[in-house]
Image 1: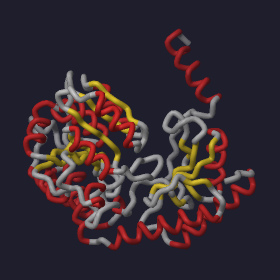
Image 2: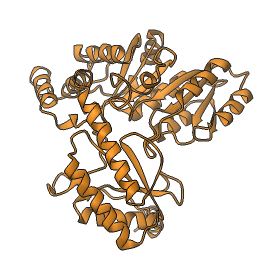
Image 3: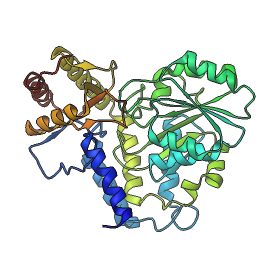
Length: 384
């Protein structure tokens, strides 16, 4: 073993000793496991209509796009998807990226330059953090959902050229919703734009499932609505919906758009079908909310400490990282897959089981999961 590999091994050993080593688990091989951790909130990723739409596109266009959107990889399907997203999000235009991560990197690093200021919630997704780092703008991290702290930081950047407040719509590890009305009010007062990452809110929040801005009636006052096609929509990819001037700018300056291979035809067709189903089958969202309420209430009755919220993401706080991993393993033995979330993804002392429910979970499945949670809590002595 040379010095390079030895350094890697040393870091991995230290990580493992802390109980923080990440490993991959293949779950679809075990049909006896019921997953309570997926972001496939509406169950669309396995829906027959989605599969059919993808298969038809593959038959017509093939399996791959063959290039970037600016060379040989721009199909009619891509432009149709962008129009559908723009209409869904009530914006003038949209631009699609090959992943949500690439979308956040490209949007933020392209729009924000030296002399500009970004205001980012402390619990924003890693892709937002990396997008801020890649830009040359000054970045202010405000305390999670703390509007007083946000305003103080806006006051400090009053002379910046462009100002952008960026926040998750639903925070992926806590399940809480951003205080968007207050954020928009501050943005308008200080001449800033607002960017909402709706990855976990699209298909979940809003009258038509369009996300956080629709949920609060603020679609016309949020300039940038970013999201993914890989969660409730049931496909893959990322996007931003905005004014045409913004999307045209990004097509010219967002490196993660310019140099990416475009989404494959089957994925694009599935995404369009997913948006269609979200709009035409609102009963899926209703069932999802009912399931989330049932699960949250049941966990509270079992005595667990939860982060307050009303979304399908339910953070069950365990505290210690090793104990959280142990709890997750015991759940798996019970036929419930819900991984432990540990530092650095969450703060020290706040390791948790991140539970997510789906519209396709049955009440009997949720009851079984709750029984397993309660059994394990008593076995290992977790006190709420």
